[in-house]
Image (cartoon, rainbow, N blue to C red; front, side, top):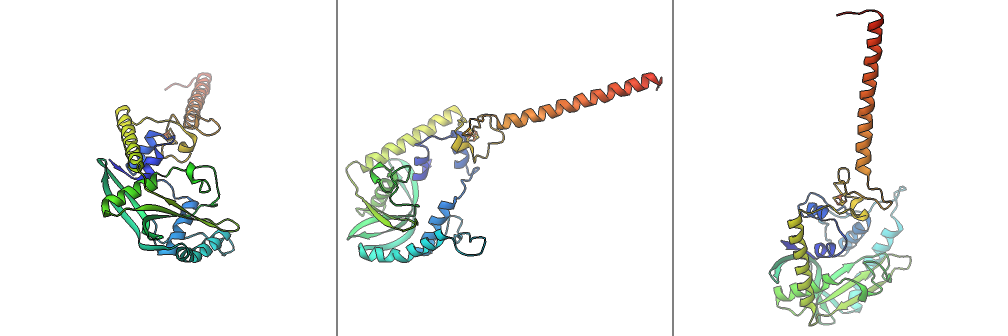
Length: 284
Ligand code: SF4
């Protein structure tokens, strides 16, 4: 079993095992959201990094053919990026580096946006583009890093130290595209518990997979999971935020009603015809 940090994070929250299995097998591709395209576009402007499909990310133009306000702000932030690097003594040695390595007996993989030096100390670098760097709630609360799941930083530092023998720390470079765009840097240092935290997350993910294998990867209806699931039309556990559990059942019922209606109609026709035949004494 191979683990990347997105997968480990994914199964540390509410999820549907059946959908996760489909994703692992490549049967259910997670859609690239508008927010993700913006992040990809930003990285392309910085380092000419292409998206996962090997294409140049494109931001859609407005109906009048002009760039959106977000795109203009993102391009302005990209221009500012290297000034920020100079100001804070950030030096890139490489970008878009994929890695595969074993950690605690588990095969792990991922992609570093970059690696290099921050104030003369080696760092793995990740570049983020949220809507607002000051956000203090939700999964991406860059304004309150202590509340965030920093598995990515832990795992990338550990993998880097193992692969390169370099004492990497980690640097998040976070730029936003709100009305008055800002940026923030978060320097995460390797500590005595970093390896333990990674080990626990890997073991936890592995234990869940073993349990799901044993129980046959059940369906667990969760509105956010179901809304874009490839099984939503046929799954009996499908559920929406409004509590509609019956999307597929309703469709099935409509089908049954239609079939029953057509059987009834057929019977009625037969009844009428037999009446006509009786009245006119048709014989065959
Ligand atoms: S429709 Fe919902 S419950 Fe069914 S497999 Fe998909 S995510 Fe799971």
